[in-house]
Image (tube, rainbow, N blue to C red; front, side):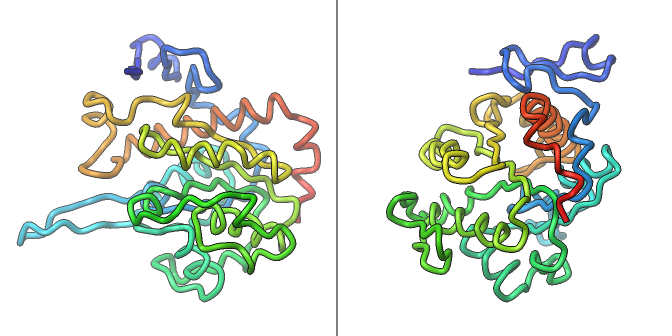
Amino acid sequence: MKKLILPLLAFLSGFVSFAQENPIATISHDPGWCAIIHRWGFIGDSLCSGEHESKRADGRTTYHDIYEYSWGQRICAATGAKGENYSQGGETTRGWIDHFWNYPLNRNSDIDAKVNLQQAYIMALGVNDFNSKMPLGSVKEDVDFEDFNNNADTYVGNYCGIIQRVRSLQPKARFFVVTMPEKKYEEYNEFLRTLPEYFENLYVLDIAKYGPDYTDSDFKTKYYRAGHLNAAGYQLTAWMFMTYINWIIENNLPAFEDIALVP
């Protein structure tokens, strides 16, 4: 079991260290090259929305999308960038196409992802597809790269369809897709790792492979509130994503030479 290590000296110097060598072996509080992206779109579900849980007087649980605490908005706060949350609790890939693209109706002021196109997008969707038993599908059978309207209603078909829709209006947008921690999602994650084969300027933030163990009891005590992250957990995620994106850009600088010209 991987352990999240927080050495005192490393923490005081502004870093969080993991035991393994990987792109996020040392998590920096400095955004690094992530700061060259000035306009972000965040596509996802509750964990993309800064969701917090609370108890009502009658004991029932209520859920709150607190976007200002989301990892996306913490990235924006660290870099001075602007970003839009195209996300809400409970969202699926199929639901996102309706709620944020076809007929925008969502808890984020009915935000329309077609209106303000961004330079780059971080996409973290799949947990609710898995929980609702959405078939995985396959790229070969379920994706029409000429017309996304013909994509099959599977996780693969809808996930690729979201990227295709955004790229149909913003062809130079960079995409960073996020794998899901926990072994039960591995089949979905294997698909996500293949996406750079099909889409240019797309990179994988492989948190399932390189990130902390989200099932670890100590991790949950520090960074969770019930079934979702707490404020510290969302901040840690922002640092982790920025560190990973900094590493990607550092190793692919020519691929980002025109990022300032993305309209």
